[in-house]
Image 1 (cartoon, rainbow, N blue to C red):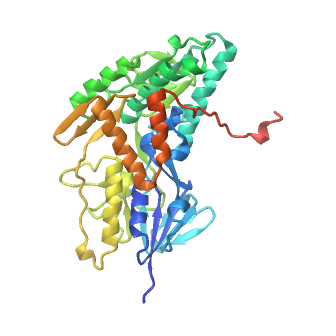
Image 2 (cartoon, rainbow, N blue to C red):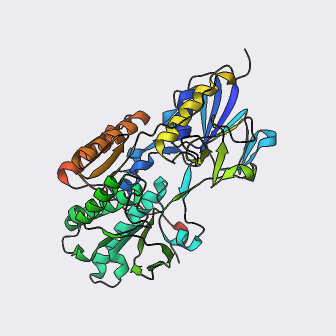
Image 3 (cartoon, rainbow, N blue to C red):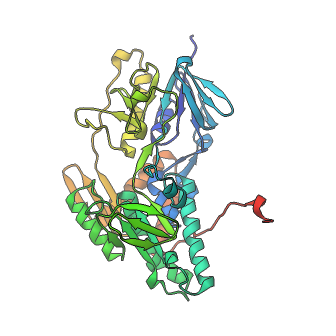
Length: 420
């Protein structure tokens, strides 16, 4: 019996997790490396940010997922560099060698080089950021009830930059929070001055979806009282005021940045293989110019006849690239490997309760049916990671009661600053 091939997977998102699960109990030695100790179900981060569900309901510890596996190890560490000539990766604490390396590092919020915007606004690409939004917004309301006056207009404006699915879903959730939850929590406060503002760089929200979905989502947002600002580009934010290219400004101390993503690139590979901050791969997800290094999911730039500008950065692509690569790696010969191609299964977004838009191939629908479809699909996706009935009960409780008991403000304990 020969030595087992050693496969190192950097990143435990949708792509990395699917690959690892498909290699479980196979004749491969697998090491999963991630700087956090859990898989995060990103499509529901917005519900964490609005206090609808607990982070633990959509976070799945890697050690729990692989606790019965004999061939998969997990290491909580951040990779600093890849050294392809030596088949190793370097971290601050240790080095790891590999026979095959799979990069599945996904994306982070794209601030387009604006470091000030990055330091003052909130992104929403991981659990910590979603919790930070919840803490900040709820802390703002606690501050307001103590002041009992409109001392700062910015406290009354929640501004969301970006009108893709994340921005639209956040705006809808905050609008419902304003209508159904905050008046109960703060019965002596008038929330008429609280504005949920969605800034869109395009004419309509959800510009990547069908025209029907765009029109309906705009209608739903307006029904919920969201202030939609179309064809506006944010140019600056100083912590108190959002400035736009048109010259308009909005006072806000609560700005959430949902205007794009960029790949989590690791140093060490030839810069020529990086296209729009993604690794250029062949149809087998092999990084161009490297025999034993692969990239899957959001970080992979795979050009195909159907997608000459690479696949969209969505969960379905990541999941199926992970599965396809696993099948190929388990075959005896590379001659039997199968190329990957994405079959578009549609897109969807929810804009509050009973309001959603769904675009399926050849079939588009909106409203209550679309909302139930969205609920069912996301529940099934979560159950495919691990049985999480708790989230179902939380949803059902919120559905019938129009309330949530999860509005905890949990701030870090700054021991070093207590005496200042």
